Picture 1 (tube, rainbow, N blue to C red):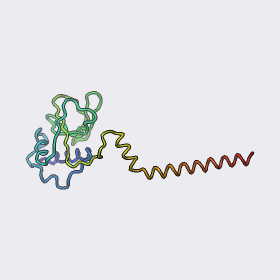
Picture 2 (picture 1 turned 90 degrees about the vertical axis):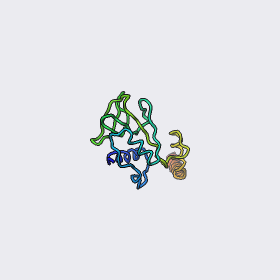
Picture 3 (picture 1 turned 60 degrees about the vertical axis):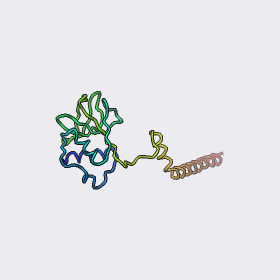
Picture 4 (picture 1 turned 30 degrees about the vertical axis):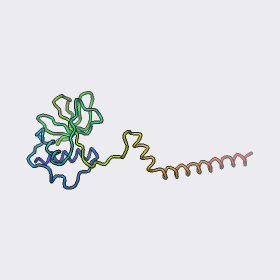
Length: 163
C-alpha cells in the first residue's frame, strides 16, 4: 500500500481532532493506492470505521474532508476558497482546485472520537468551558470588587480631608 494514503489518513484524523491508536496500520490492506477511488472504503471496512459521502457541493461545516480527484487521487480538502474553489492539501503543498460534480467527498467517523458530552451548539461549548472554571472566575470577581471598594474608599477619604 502506498504510504501516502496512510499519511493522508493520519493528517485527516489529526485535523478532525481524532487520535488514532498506535497500531492502527496493522489492519490496513497493503494492496491499495492513492489513485484508487475504492481504497478508502476498503481501509474503512478493514478497520471498522464508517464513511459518509457528501452529496453536492460541500459547505463550511464539512471540512476537513477527504476528496477524490480523478487523475490526482485522494487529497485532504481543508476549506472553501471563493465561490467555486476548494483548498486542498497535497504532497506538493496547499493548492486550490475548482468545484465540479465529479469530485467525491468523504468523511470518516472514527470510533471512540472524543467529543464534548451533550454539546450540540457553540453556546453549549462556551458555557461548559465557563462552568469548568467557576471557582477561578469567582475568585477574580471577589478580588475585583475588593480592589474597587478600596479605590472608592480612598477617593472618598481624600475628598473628606480636603473639605
